[in-house]
Length: 523
Image (cartoon, rainbow, N blue to C red):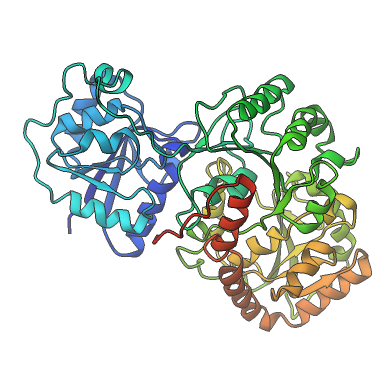
């Protein structure tokens, strides 16, 4: 069967629908639907060859008509999840005479109203639903001539609405300032805590717009600032004043107690530099959102109105496809540790315990580390993250899942200190989502996870003897670990995904922003 040819036009950034496009490709593949998606344009800030779609590259505006004709798509799709304004690429799409599919938000919907060969779908639809929409759109009649934009359309209908026409703006968006990597891409914390939850079809109550430091909102029903996404004191002051002047709720979000960070922390100098602005926002905010009760208790000294939204995984990233089959070598028992370089002190807890392990059943126990250090050592092996996987959190998750059940179990050493006491147990959720059970430090976040029913292998106190005992027990019972991994994967899916926690999350967000509780989406 000939694949459905879908074209997307322009610069496909995250806020333009990049994640949705990649989700659609996976959704179509799972359902056995042949889809060929081509981006006539480019993805900023990431190697194009790492993407699951064909990418033609940057173009001059004068070339767009020729490029569309050359690709000859069955349908041109606009995957945006927030309101667009005029959209010059939509003009080119309509001019091509090919079927066009747009969401029912912003100017895109208004511009295609009543035009033959166009289809409008609910903006909350998920990737699987949009696959079917695009298949229907491809059956719409083509137009040899296409649709020309009316003369003066942009000036007359968008910059200066005609006299007598009532203007009814859509619901103002929630505006977010999210933490980013040096490349400008959102970091993992931004995806997990803000970007994916606020756009999840079972949680979203309206459009969400991400701005950069230095950009004030035009309109908003709420403003959310994450961690140290704003580090400039002058801009923080302007944003606080803007929210007060426009009577817009301001919410601060963090999943770490960055204001009481110890001087020996690896990122102490960075946070000391940016914490002045962040603290002014936290103390001025209508509310603070955080990830654990322990952290909430610590932050109430800064702002009495603190709400807890526990970390959860987006099932669309972690569960849409089964984990690849096990690739564990017969001569090795592989143990996983995953974390950033800031966890070097925590990782040191394991060094003596790992080096003391003996051979088990003729197999060698190997600790494999992702992210926490650059080079292998005598007691561990480092697995480098490929460049493409390191460019974004969704890419990293995709890569991690592609490794399959490589590991027998995972370890989560965490020193018992004030900073770590406020952390969440998300590392156990990450491991569990790929079917890897965990031995975790016996500290607050993991004790609470075990009390909630998560099938952890063991909790180990902060000593070499305790960790040796826990590791010895796991290695002795290695035959039952695969079943433990399956149980943990099922527990995470049922209890710790965005879909599973959507109702509670909506209620907390509504209270923090003082917004009506959104009805759940059918998606």
